[in-house]
Amino acid sequence: MAVKVAKFGGSSVADGIQLSKIREIIKSDPSRRYIVVSAPGKRFSGDNKITDLLYLVKTTMENLLPYEQLFQVVCDRYTAVHANLGLKVDMQSAYDEILEKLKTNPSADYIASRGEYLNAILIADFLGFDFVDAENMVKFDEKGRFLMEETFTAIREELANHEYAVIPGFYGSLPNGDIKTFSRGGSDITGSLIAGAINAECYENWTDVSGFLMADPRIVKNPKQIRTVSYKELRELSYMGASVLHEDAIYPARIADVPINIRNTNDPEDPGTMIVSPERAEQLISGESSRDIITGIAGSKDFTVVTLYKNMMSQERGFVRRILGILDDYDINFEHLPSGIDTVSVVMSNKQINGRLDEILVEFQSRLRPDSIDVIENIAQIATVGHKMSARRGTAATLFTALANAGVNIRMIDQGSSELNIIVGVDNNDFNKAIQAIYGAFVEA
Image 1: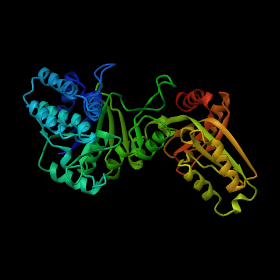
Image 2: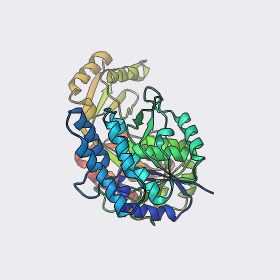
Image 3: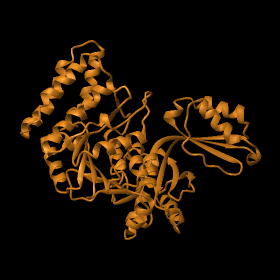
Image 4: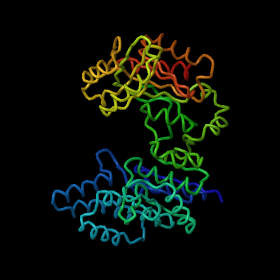
């Protein structure tokens, strides 16, 4: 039988109503055999996420204040769902176990992870599935570094004993048995790990949106949905500011070539967005006319471009290395490094510069001896991303013409050899107008 792994995020498991929805989704497809769950999210505006409450429990303990009543608020959320759904599982034993552990002042990782732990116990009972603790499968070394191969092996061995299982996301364990959480990506990473380890047919990531959009809906009205995107395209969009899965949550599925399907718990009939290998993307998009040019547009504001000019720069060995050395001294990552024969531009985020631009310019002048330095501040970067779009005739012309017609002045252009994107720098004030113009030229034309 084909196997799918389905992960349900915080909004999808926030209360009994949402859990009833996910049960219908899971039962509608018997291949959805392994279910990864987050801790309950907000039920309404102004509500608290369970994980936030648990971190608050830890803070309360550190300040030597009574924490029992706050922990009871956490338990009450699960107890209400337990009662509303008429479940039989003994949650009180789990609460008591955690309360005993809290007396030993456990780590923040342990406390935060209990949201997923309790939710997985409850949902396993609701679905009639086995509960399998991620603590026994997701492995970290003694320094807290994630161990991919050991985790894959442990997942395969454990799940071979369970035809259907619910697994808490977000955490694993250290060699001494202590709980260790992922620093980012949380339950998304766990779902990807399960899917990659068992070579699942698909990894379904269920959330409160129907996949990814071609542009930010706050900028472009009713942007089209991205039906298919390659891992590489997603990486480009994510890096440029699009709200998508973190790379850590994609990697385990990607190395196993497991497709990722972003789905909407509240609209399960919508096919969502498929994230696949470039080869699969080529096959899936062959009939989609809009995908013949671009996949999506993403960007972010507040960058500074420093351009250094020096005659015969291309003949001076180590020039770029010295630039990067200066940035390293200031603990700054460069975003892009477009160059010419006698010029090189360094694009840096204002956040990383953190008010030290004058100091950095002094270092550039004293250690590089350029003929001139030009600085452009308050620049926005916009990436237009598409599968091999740079090899398609007229793509750049269409983009630049659209910006010119919209009255947007291009301050920087960077087109890499990956054939995936064209990045332009424009003034912060032109950010929205530029994205709207590019979207209009490629999608609405």
